[in-house]
Image 1 (cartoon, rainbow, N blue to C red):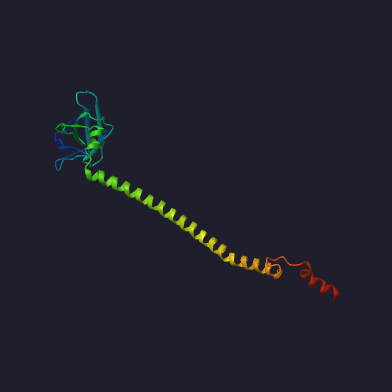
Image 2 (image 1 turned 60 degrees about the vertical axis):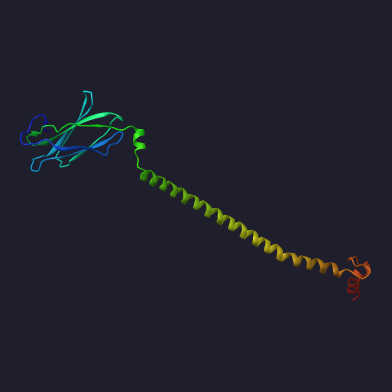
Length: 199
């Protein structure tokens, strides 16, 4: 492991150190180096303003020009330095970069109207799709109920004339002019039976 406290006079300090993608609890620091510097890695010093405790991040065998800073506190000022690392040691520190993490409420308020609109549009589209599915299912169920009712009604309607004809036929077989309501005499109803016995 290289000791970054050993200075390499051939290395220049990183340039254009910038904080990007600033969030409540994270950020990304980016930088540039002079072309031709024999850089094999970097070292980042992260410190809360007015606090002596440091976080030191060192990476070697990499050509990346950015690093994620994580586990930051919201609404807090930080100071960041970047150093380049070569086989011979480290460069001088870059110019310090001071930044403040936003509050959670500030981050929510800083959302652009387009972002909020797109989120709301996505949620509305999901709700609309769900409502359409429910409506279609209910309509299919109602159509089934109506079709079943119509079928049963047709069956009942078809059977009603047959029942009336059967009743009328049965009542007319045993009726006489003297008994129009269907009350036949015993002699008239028994005559066919007696005729069969005599033969």
